[in-house]
Image 1 (cartoon, one colour):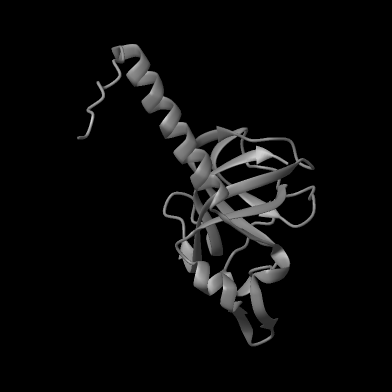
Image 2: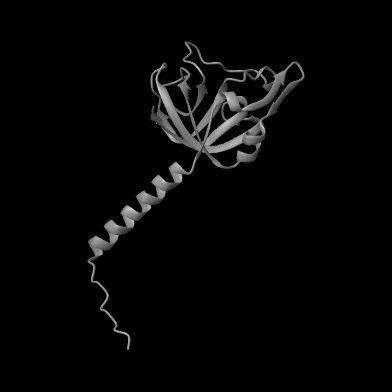
Amino acid sequence: MQRILPLPSFSRREALLGLAAASLCGQAHAATEAEAIAFDGLYKSFGVLGFQFSDRVTALRGHAVRMLGYMAPPLKAESHFFVLTREPLAICPFCQSDADWPVDIVVVFMKAETPMVSAGRKVAVTGRLEIGSATDAETGFVSQIRIVDAGFTLA
């Protein structure tokens, strides 16, 4: 004969706190699921005939990624995007066309307008990877590789 145990009783407050904690654990788990990528692994080839994305980057298109780099000096103190660079820069490396696209930058589009950090500070960016030529409708900025719906922390 099976014995049926009474269900525990929770107050509304305890239930809401439990749901909030579960949500935070899910967000933390999602952040740890992001695949780390590095500037050295973005391209298979790059030369006078153009470039080819690496097989790994192509496979990660649309997936959560994490990347370390430096925030290039922004155009304004708060923005919805910035340029992530391999090394700290004194000026922002904006390009006129994707033909001039440098291999050591990635455009990062934030989930929301965010205060930027000072140049020279290393950041860890997490977001969804997009590749291929795209022009931002608001700024006209042309990019080849982007991390979108992103957030960052100081590294």
